[in-house]
Length: 90
Image (cartoon, rainbow, N blue to C red; front, side):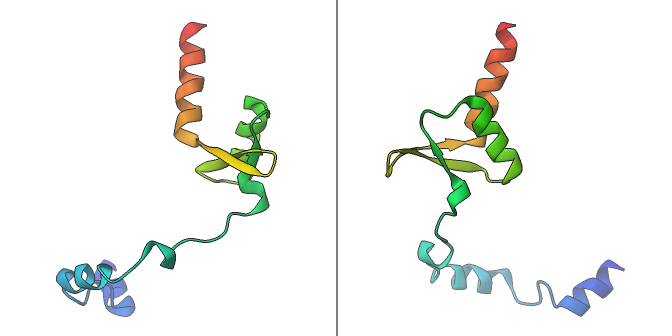
């Protein structure tokens, strides 16, 4: 079954070196996209609001704002670490 899938989709038919050479020509700008409205959160939002937003709109991070200015980034991994710290103190 796996071999049929590989043949049907022509996955990895080219040498790995070809992919590496092609990757050197790619730029970060080729991959970025403008953040959506749901990827921003105000710096005064509660931890609960941030968790809710990360669960409902499954992002790995939120851009933190103060007014119209982005002042930081809240990563899901940071939030997870903070929650673990809170649980440990209980």
